[in-house]
Amino acid sequence: MSGSPAFDASTLAPRPEWTEAKRIVVKIGSALLTDRATGGIKTAWLNSLMDDVSALAGAGKQIILVSSGSIAIGRHMLNLPKGPLALEQSQAAAAAGQISLAHAYQELAAARGLTAAQILLTLGDTEERRRYLNARNTIEVLLSLKAIPVVNENDTVATTEIRYGDNDRLSARVASMMSADCLVLLSDIDGLYTAPPNEHPDAKHIPLVTEITPEIEAMAGDAGTELSKGGMKTKITAGKIALAAGTNMVITTGKIHHPLRAISEGARVTWFIAKSDPVTARKRWISGQLVPNGQIFLDEGAERALLTGKSLLPAGVTRIDGSFDRGDAVIIRSADGRELGRGLVAYAAADARRIMGKRSSEIVAILGYEGRNTLIHRDDMALTRT
Image (cartoon, rainbow, N blue to C red; front, top):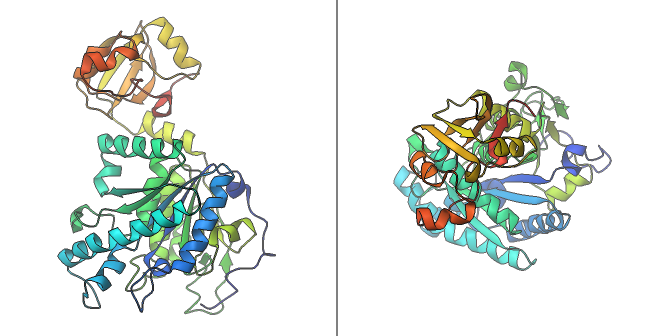
């Protein structure tokens, strides 16, 4: 790689966007994780990364890993030819490689007293609200149990029409879905330059981006290598997704050991700074960008509870209008019809009507299954006034 060294501890102090982040998504690309010659995992490098993850978890931070590598590992296991693979070959390679990849994370996490949990997603899991809610809830529970979710695209079933295509975009969708404070893209370069530095030795490093303008987009080169579909262009696209969700993003080199520790020690990186925090951005999305499919009316007690930051329980609901599915947006109204806000509902309309006015402890007996205690969780709600 041309240009300045990938790591210089004297370059910058770590930014508050890093030191104060509570929830961090880290994207790991195939080219960093796998050995091109052997097709195996770079165990020493992954060990160093898991040391970093363990240290961050020990400091009270929640870490989500978005890891490529299954296809790159599997193609060597199955002796598939070099060069582009047909869709069916990629799916077969993913099926073989995913076992080895998951085992490596499980083993290295356990050696540090951590639990790794595999999450396989397709495009629809973050684009369709019902599946989005399922995926979000699953990862929330794992994080609450101190586990380390390891996310990858479900390449064994994803087709060309329904896939992310690169894990930069997948990681940004995961960061958005989980309201992460920070997204880390580990790259083969230490950030964004005014031009690709391998082609332009005089290119200048850009340490801070506060807005992704056409000029910033024009600085990105084309995508990558046989192992990696990503390039700087896909990272800029990921930046747009992350910043819109209120998530700060950092591009840093992954070609060194302990790449996350290096951020804490002042490594040269490029920060993309969001204009709002994840909670604000998420509530803006709920209140302004989703078409509501129904209305839920509350009694005065429930209204008071919402205005003090509580979730909406079934007991406080007096009336439900409309037809909606789990995860759809609905309008929340007071007893006299005033709009109090909007939210993503945890039950379909038919089940919501069955449990309205009832205590949460009665849900299992009424519905025959154990759903959420809340009808709309406070994290899935945007009020029009506080």
